[in-house]
Image (cartoon, rainbow, N blue to C red; front, side):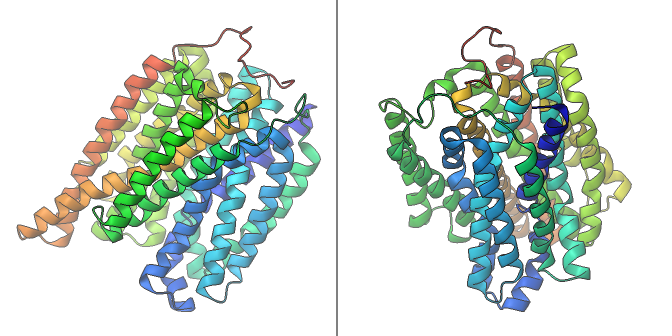
Length: 473
């Protein structure tokens, strides 16, 4: 692959990643308009968000394995095409059912696209330093999508209509399809295609569905309700079945031994904690800005933009930092910065100004950017035959970690808020007390992630180790 195609390949997979991550949170601000226009019930409205997350989380591992077997390029293009068409359907939706179906299909397309992007980057950039820089760009684009989603959703729904939060994907998707079809040129998998691990696919998909569903619905249904408890039990049992199946089949979906590798296993644990802390903070800090500080949706979205800019800058420099100081030091230090920023946000009061909100968010942004070398380091430890499913594991852990972060941090916040309300505190004071306690819990956990990263990322596979990634595999 020549340099021009390589650069265009990176642009294509980054744009696809931007759209997939953007749709995780761009919808939130537009929900009131959608409810009024399509006459959603209160419970039905939640599925505008949940349908996407549920399908996306359920099929990530399956999408990664399909890419390993049949090729990452075709799955990337098929998934991107499905995502683009589904975005058009969602934007044109004239009924609740049509919109939820469109969102579910968007999630399926994203589940096909997301695990292939990192695998394509690995194949397009066999040089480790170049790959680290490319992953930095990929991570920066993902961070930008998470940060600008609420702002873009607010602007489009306020000044155009809610349909435009989906229509915006269509021209970008078409252009990305054309660019990817021309630029992406990858070697075909050598040898015979291994059969699909049907039992492992069903067990992993069922476990992810049960876990994601329980995390989404637990807050409204009650964490002790039979449906939610049953969902968590089913997820645990199916995960155990998956682990047993993968150790016994000839061609497993996931080599369970990968999780025992220090770099891969430790990287997965660190990514889980990273997502747990950051996603929860994004969600509840947005509520703090609007419900306590009385920011408008647009102002709340703007508050995250400087943080996103620093994430991008940190992502660009993360490869240099990992090479200069070692990935274990750079990632551990970045996680410590995130923990410090979260703890700083816990000191904000009910009268904080925009200028006072900025410092902790900027510290989180710097730390979030420099954790990019975590992804690049784990990529270097992936075997070529399972690059797609291994990146899918990484993406799945990120997704589930984020959901669990919102859930657990929300539970801590709600418990403290309820206790303060019973003591007679007003809503703003009660929410703020819960917000502070939840952030301190998140800060401690992210600090633990810094320790794990410092230990796990010290190990590197030798250059001649057969498990190292090879584009010829």
